[in-house]
Length: 64
Image 1: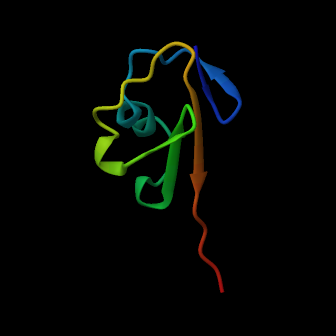
Image 2: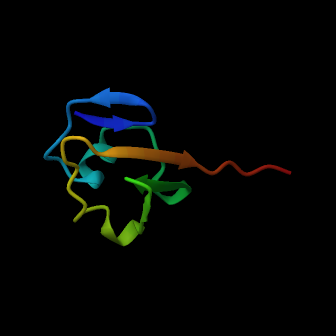
Image 3: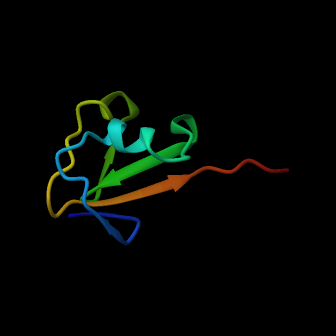
């Protein structure tokens, strides 16, 4: 199980990019932290989610 923003999901074995493709997140407007380390956008396709990972995804919202 991988914990995403506090919710446990059975997605171990997928890459971060594969998971994000199944969501409504705009990859251009998010930051992702896995196990307290920021993951660069260029690494989403190579970042394998493993059992026990803790992931936080933060969306940026513009305004004015």
